[in-house]
Length: 135
Image (cartoon, rainbow, N blue to C red):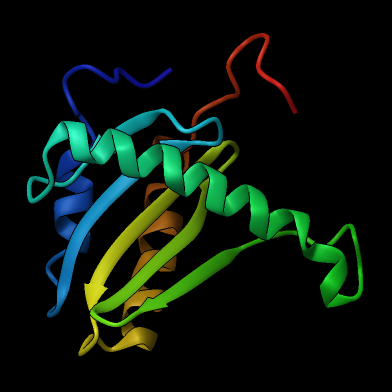
């Protein structure tokens, strides 16, 4: 399992933020634990956001039936706010990548970059579920 203490994967998230108008990035487990965070966000805030993002992806997955098939797989959620966007994507089994950006970001470019990052980093961006954690 990834070492949560030393933020070993933080450099990967910093790489994702080289795009104009991006702000913060975090990598989290399905149960809301912070795995890594970009340099632009402090650890306490990253942990708080990881917990929120876990809830967001859980809600999104629970609405799959609204798309017509209750067994369809959740892949991405984009939330829009007055001052920007939050992109939340599946990053492997039990792991999610979240990036925030300003309202001026090229949304298509960010989505593509996140999928590219997930594909390129594959196994390093995934974490197995914790023993005893709910499904």
